[in-house]
Length: 334
Ligand code: NAI
Image 1 (cartoon, rainbow, N blue to C red):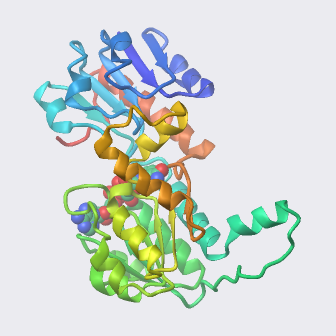
Image 2 (cartoon, rainbow, N blue to C red):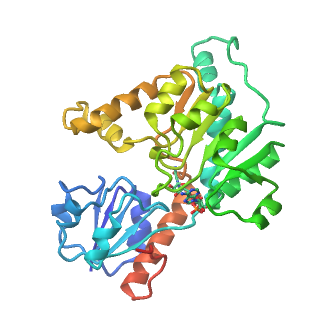
C-alpha cells in the first residue's frame, strides 16, 4: 500500500518506517497542496498536519485515496463533507498530552503579564533596566476559560495552583466538573466583563468563529489579557487590533492567528505576490499584530514538545495500522 506523509522531521519518519515496514512510504517535507499532490496521486492513505488544507480541489487529485490520518486533534483543515461523499475515512489524535497545550498557554500568559520578551531583549542589549515592565500577581486575579474540555481542564488546574479565581464558559456544562475542579460556569458576557485573563480552548466550529469580537472586547477590563491557543478565527482579528489600538484591553498572547498558513507561506517565499488578494487584507492585519509591544505571537507550536509529538506519531501509526487491518481507531464522526 502506498502511504504519503507530509512535513515530518527525520526522527518522526523513523517511527513510521519501523511501524509500517511492509508498505511503500512517501515523505514530503511540505504540506499537501494541489501543487504537490501529483507526486502522491496513487496513495491510498495520507498522513497530514493542520497546514495541509484538504479541500475539494486537493481531493480531486487522488483517485485511490481511502483514508486520511490527521496527526492533530483539530480537523477543521479537512473538508469532511467532501471526504464523506468520496467514502474517505478520517482519523485524528484525540489525546496526546492536553497538558502540553495548557502548559504553553500558561507560558504565554506569564510571558505577556511579566513582559518576559521585552525584558530578555533589554538584557541582551546590555540594558539592565526594568522601567515600564511592571507585571501583576496572578494570585487573587480572575481567569476566564473558554472551553472546559481536555485542555481547558488542565488550564483550570494550573490556575488553581496559582490561587486564581476561575470562571469558565462552555456550551455543555458539567456540574460535577465544576465542583471537582473548583471553578464557576458563567455567561460569555459575564466572563468577558469580569476576567483579568481570558484563555481560549474551544474548537473552531460553527458558533465559535469570532466568538470574541467587538462586542466582547467592549466590555472587557482595560487591563484584560487574552490568550489564544485554540484556533485563530476564534478571535475577530480586526476587532482585536481595534481593541488594542484604543486601549480597550491590556494585551494579547497568540499561538494561533487567522490566516496563519498564508503568513507561513509568505515567510518562506520572500514575496507575497502569490497570496490571494482577498486574503492579503487579513495578512496585513496579522502583520499589525506581530509588531505591537503588548502582543506576543508564537507560530502554532503549543503542541510541540518531544513527549507530545512522540505520542502523536505513535497514535497516528496505530490509526494507520487500524485502517490497514480494518480495525479502525479514532475515526472522526462525519
Ligand atoms: P475538547 O473537545 O476536549 O474541548 C472543547 C470544549 O469546547 C468542550 O468542552 C466543548 O463542549 C466546548 N465547545 C464546543 N463548541 C462550543 C461552542 N459552540 N460554544 C461553547 N463551547 C463549545 O478539545 P480540546 O482537546 O480541549 O482542544 C480544544 C482546541 O484546542 C482544539 O479544538 C484545537 O482547535 C486546539 N488545539 C490547539 C493546539 C495548538 O498547538 N495550538 C493543539 C491542540 C489543540
